[in-house]
Length: 236
Image (cartoon, rainbow, N blue to C red; front, side):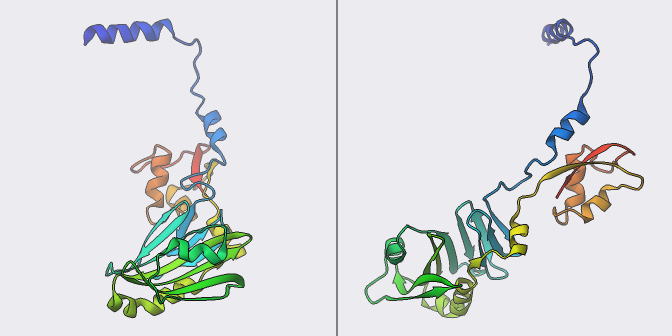
């Protein structure tokens, strides 16, 4: 170990930089505007409201349901775990989207209509032994699928209105929803008199643990505070 330590010290001494500078502020200023967390085009959740800024679409999942959101898909599961709602991109042909996506048993009912002002096809029946209602809707040339599925007839009967309500909540993003779907970004500011991380956290979208996360971002965990004039990273 002593040999390795000496070798490391000798190597560092050979490559020493004359008049070194830290350059922290220069680095921080280059980070200003960097996307933080979710990337652009991702699916985002705001109180179980699914927002997809890439698709320009919104879907309200039921309160209390467990939601998993991936880049092109959202799945919500009922508290009892016996019903789910799926949202995803469909094929190119509206009329063929539901039969291709779901293997409905003979006797399933299909109809045409509109959903949130867009051409749509609806289906109700049983697929893979599970009662299912589904919609395929075409928006700006792309088809999207929404399905409500019960694990059995009892679960479906209990959650039927909830499943239908979620399908009917499908819509294009409103202006305020587009803002909510905007990815968070890092901003760099200079601490002024009275600047505290608790105060910055109150204006941050980071949630209940915002103060802790800002402390970690700035190397001030657990109780440090910014000094006057210090550059601080925040999230907007």
